[in-house]
Length: 290
Image 1 (cartoon, rainbow, N blue to C red):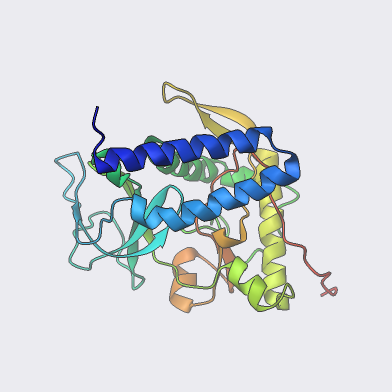
Image 2: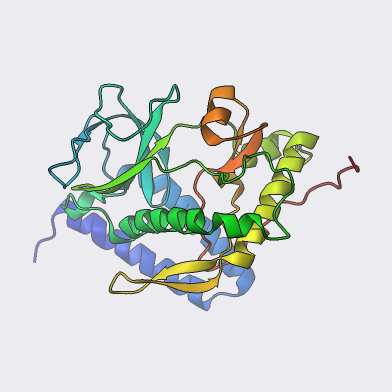
């Protein structure tokens, strides 16, 4: 059998993945952590070249009666499971309130050299998990706010989840599409490096509110787990992804108004559960009594 170039590249990638997986399984905890870090770094380097680029494409729902039409602009974000693209103002977006804030589309990754236009199964699952999680928290938010660990006088209004909302989602040929407002700001990861671990008081106070919210969520909500048949069930307590790169500082008045913030605050880019690990908190300095 003669392998074409894309097949050879796919074979080499699979072989590398198997080798790295084997090393992770057989190594000691410290070595495994180092290898895991190397794998993530390698993934970030390879990802832009391994997944399809959707800039300039028009995305439409599978449902013919839905007139939504997205013309995708620049790709502004690239994660392990999906890419984020600006939506052109010439797009047709029925059912989405008018806003001065730009909109973006989150699209699951399609692997280039597999020769298919369908999204990667794990990427598609992540999109559906994000939608299901968002709806799950909305339906339980009243109960979460009543939890004793929930912050008093939080930066966000009552009934508001401190995350960038999903304004609309639909099924397309490219997979499940999420439409969100574009929130521009510095991530906690960047700010923590900028301030060398000593965040300004208003940021440290906001982060404490986020941490308290996470504890209230884990006390009241169970992690959604999907089985092979696509059915959802409850797992262990819901530990929100507290990766510093998943929190953004919002202080722009228009964005604050859209997100329901009463004052500048950190919010989640996406409020999804950690599946295989506990939340990791950044250490905070003690705040002086108000």
